[in-house]
Image (tube, rainbow, N blue to C red; front, side, top):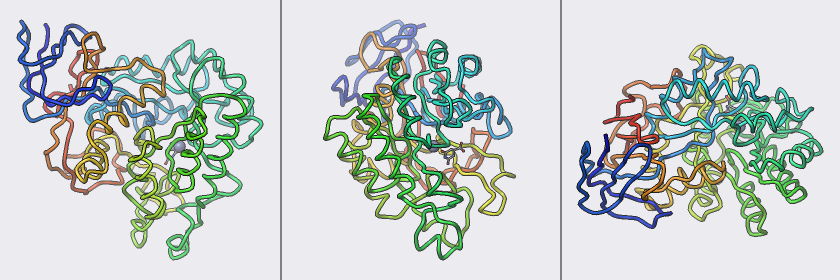
Length: 428
Ligand code: DOR
Ligand code: ZN
């Protein structure tokens, strides 16, 4: 039956909409958008809520196959739906590594069965994420991979990165870089600076990231391949991407809420392993520079790097705990609370960062609140006040770095291809 979504404030910068409108869905598409629509349809009153093109988190670790004790495709896409997402891009550091068409196919099949959101799989750039042999890029693309990345690691050799890009650019996909010079970073645990010194933890210097940000931009210039810098965290990294864009290079970047809204000071005195992430939480100056990049267009996408780990894995000495925090259930709320409500960005820019640009960078179907578009839609209430983690998590994991934080704004309803995946805050 057709579905009529009535009375929500629709924001869609692509369609140029910012106002109260009704949206009629028929099948998997939007049939009509307009004022006071009438139709033989199930009606949902969304007065007081916002309705936007479906959000996509383009950096998510689903952990399956291989690390199902941390999370499964079912549990983590459930968490994505709870957070308001209509799609995610999955990272390839699974076991076996997602470096061939069979694993890509497996991820897609599991996602299809779970049905909580779309999963756009990325495939490894190099076999086994080892940085030595080019992965089976063509095979992966044939099975639906949308991007290449060795996320979890940087490709250590510039020559290898060049070969990957020169070979792989024929597929037209984006190369996504986790920037980390392993020689320089070594066993670094947190940002290198006064806090690491005070805590007696090995430092992970900003330069360990920036070296590869700059290097990868150079290799993108050399090869002409599309480059996307993942989870950028430093002021000089942002400056490098800004300069690359000014030069007209095909370079984009993403930032995560934890690099925007948390700093290494939060680890001082707490040794909270949930805050151990890669790249690490940086200084207040770095976080401010990344926020400025979000405001001025240097940052293209907000992603979570949602990285579930089991409680027992995080409940260890700081040095032995794995890197990563979850965050897909609260990223929308954090962006509304810390960027939109204070006026750093408006809702239209938020939609660019969390829906339009991720889809464009990944080269997947664009979505708009317009007749004929795929009906991938996120509805949120901008005024629900809640505390992260108060009702537990849909994710299998609990290592959310924002646990206990008060936020405002929450996804209430999500539609994926016209099918309700979240209704009144409940995952379907
Ligand atoms: O914090 C992180 N965790 N950063 C990464 O790059 C990988 C991820 C993971 O797989 O846990
Ligand atoms: Zn990464």
